[in-house]
Image (cartoon, rainbow, N blue to C red; front, side, top):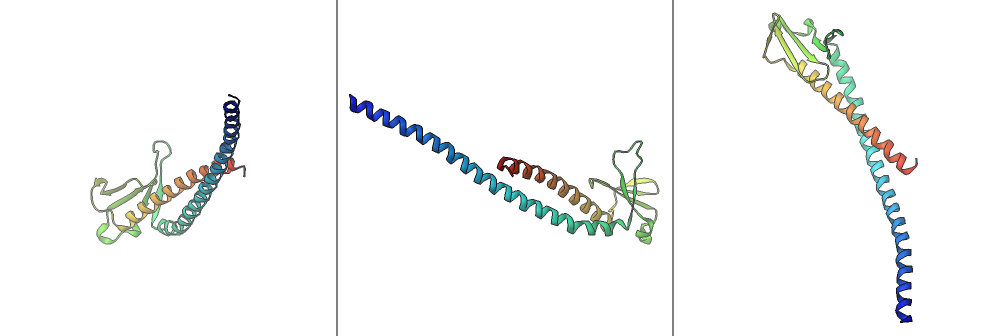
Length: 155
C-alpha cells in the first residue's frame, strides 16, 4: 500500500513539474514562431516598398499625359483625363478618363459615352493606379502585422 502511494506521489510530482516545463516550452515555441512571422512580414514590407518605389516613376511619367479633374461638391472620385495633345489625329473628339482608384476607364466622343478601346496610354495609367493602391493597402496591412509581432516579442 505504501509502495502504491509512493508511486502515485512521485507521478503527481513529475506530472506537475512536467506541466511547468510544457508551459515554458509552449512559450518558447510561440516566441520562435512570432520571430519567424515578424521576419517574414519585414521581408514582405521591404518587397512591397521596393515595388512601390519602382512604380512611382512610371506613374509620374504617365502623369505628363493627364490632367486631374474632380468636383468636390458631387464627386467621390476624381478622374485623370488624357490631355488632347496626347491623343492622335484619328482620336480627335474623344475624351478619355481614368478613375483615380483605377476601377474604370470612360471614353466619350462628342459628349456621348462610347464603348471604344481607350488605348494603351489609359490602360497603362489604370494599371499603374491599381498597382499603387494595392501596394499601399498591402504596406498598411503589413505594417500593422509588424507592430503586432513586435509588441508580442516586446521589441
